[in-house]
Image 1: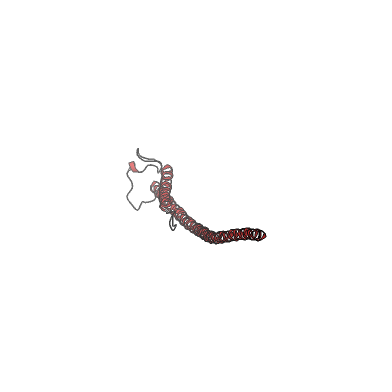
Image 2 (image 1 turned 45 degrees about the horizontal axis):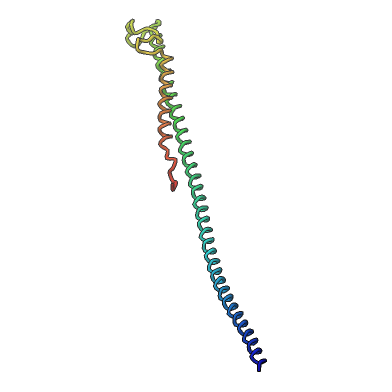
Length: 180
């Protein structure tokens, strides 16, 4: 009978060891399942975070491309306006200078004709008093000689057109059409 309790004790020890091993395996499986579900959750969170990041990057790239397109269109518009102002100013300047030169030439012609009117032919109009029959280049105290007067007139026109050009260039809105 002594042998039976030893066998039972050995069997009980083996059975206890087996139960401890089964309990440990159960805890390990439960722990593994917990970590596996936690890892799946983390994987899903990572995927959502990556998708949100990719969407943000795509949004910034789209906005940057749109801003570049708006900037290019704005530059083209501003250059077009500046070119139109440059051409219009140059045309107006040339027209005004040509008119001033024609006026100066006409005045020189009238002055020469007036000085020449007393040269032996009968004048169709009454003669000028001797004080007014001086040369065309003679000036009073407050006037410039004709050549200097013409140059001053051209420079005044040039300055006036330059001022208008600066005002018109300054009036161009360089940020028109941009969303910033």
